[in-house]
Amino acid sequence: MRTPIIAGNWKMNKDMQSAKELARGLVSKNARFRDREIILFPPYPFLPAVAGLCQDSRLEVGAQDISEHEAGAFTGEVSAEMVVSTGATWTIAGHSERRNYHLETDEIVNNKVKRALSAGLNVILCVGENLRERERGAAFDVVQRQTERGLAGLDQDAMGHVVLAYEPLWAIGTGKTATPRQAQEIHEFLRWVIQRMFDNATAEDLRILYGGSVKPGNINGLMAQKDIDGALVGGASLDVESFSAIINFEV
Ligand code: 13P
Image 1 (spheres, rainbow, N blue to C red):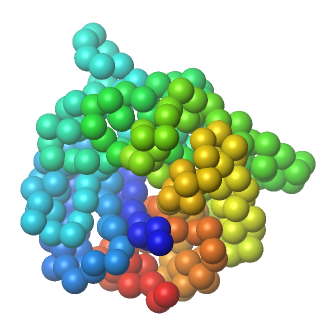
Image 2: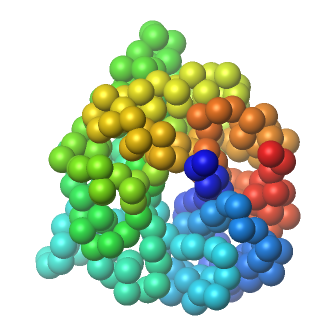
């Protein structure tokens, strides 16, 4: 059985005070879960505070991105080791907003995945096609390429610290969710890609999350799919009530 993950990507939202309020609210509302993992991804400045608030709880904390470099003259960058030193245990790599607005290639994303793992972080690798790619029937090719290149050079052991997130760009922040069937189709395919790259057990154990306009009203339908093991939530993770409702999805 794969333990489901509900992760909240706060993106560039909140300030120190409202970040702490959100973390506190989520900790007190979601203390009882044993059968699902909950991960918060606040902006960098709030990582130590949020990690501190979540320390004795069921909630885990991660960074939204890390540098592909280890240390040195990289103004504005944040290293995997720095993230570890805040008490955070996860990072996202390859989010479409990084790929598109910051021109991150599959090679850069692969470097970030490797950096994260060697610093001891767990990684959520994001893949997903844009609307044009979906319309010309290239969705499968795009997610396969991003997955193979993003995970290049990893072995089976390393895959124990990796989670995949399928986030179709046309569904991010648009209110347009992929249907459970559309998502399941890609998730099943991604599991096959992983089986081909690694082996059966690695593919079976891998958690594959869906992201893109996940809300309290559509989470149950998504989670009912065989290969959907959780959600990476943007907008709806910014509020205690809506994120808690998603965490409370019904099995
Ligand atoms: P929304 O849930 O706001 O569509 O964002 C999804 C996302 O990009 C999570 O990483």
